[in-house]
Image: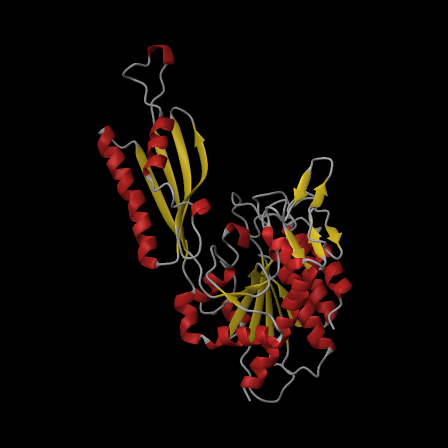
Amino acid sequence: MISKEHIINRFVSYVTVDTESDPKSQTTPSTEKQWDLANKLAEELKAIGMQDVSIDENAYIMATLPSNVDHEVPTIGFVSHFDTSPDFTGANVKPQIIEKYNGKDIVLNEAENIVLSPDYFEDLLQYKGQTLITTDGTTLLGADDKAGITEIVSAMEYLINHPEIKHGAIRVGFTPDEEIGRGAHKFDVEKFGADWAYTMDGSQIGELEYENFNAAGAVVKVKGKIVHPGYAKGKMVNSMYIAQEFISSLPRFETPEHTEGYQGFFHLCSIEGEVEETTLEYIIRDHDLGHFEARKEVLKKLTDELNSQYGREVITIEIKDQYFNMREKVEPVMHIVDIAEEAMKQLDITPIIKPIRGGTDGSQLSYMGLPCPNIFAGGHNFHGRYEYVPVESMIKATQVICKIAELTALKAQ
């Protein structure tokens, strides 16, 4: 059995290290503090008995668990990221352990009246009677994706200590900067040397995903003219008003808060403006490639229409693709999804096969030649103060890793 206490202690040791990434930085990793956990992980992998442990100049960590069978088995990999999102602070994380959750409100921070309530977060009720790890209401938790790292390290340790479980060669990889879209940018797929891999980066127990958004980012710059407001008639052009026109011209209900499942969206991430210039930053998401391209064209056409309306170039737009739907790369090797699904069923976990409404290192890795579906890590409410993870879900994810390794070896006989 995988010890609950062992899982908790390992997870807490990771989340109490601040590894927030920074999208404005040009270095890899984007923050120096990510090295604190990266170096710790490399040493821990050596300590549990992993082979070929390496950490490169960009903080990418790789290690090997050698095969313990005589026959040829495909080399499989498991990947997680150790950075946390810049959406909410990850400094001074103080995890709270809630034993035998009673299904009622959890007071995260009494002084600030911050409450994690099943009235709002209904998923909590799935975990009645289980052990939850929450925040203290002032930081995120970091289960995304330190739960995944906990599970991978714990699974490797378990397999090392239980050689009766037969498996082929297993590679593990830990990456920086996934939360800012760069987790796979400098990942050496050839060095990793796996036939396929799995990211342990999903949410609730049972999630198994091999589809994700096609993604792009758009920067819209609106030019105005500033003159003294007392003498502005016929002269001032307020860029913020033109930006408002741009925003209101997009489909109102094609935004994250109004979409689900396979529905795509335009998401206005930030506005920074003055009379002279306003900058809008959007992300564009859609699972369907045709719809994705059409969304980009909507933005370009709207830019042209407003420029035509004002009789000059008041708006410029720059659109950059970020990642693509990994379904195209995984479908030709669907047996790798089937193995994960079978592993869950053998462990009495109901697989939840659905599209990711986001991205994952696995998307980019799949296009780099390493097909890489995504498996649950167990956490909920990522990137904010209400984040939590059931310990039992982390234990189950650890067992799934071990079972995938075992089934892969069995099927290769």
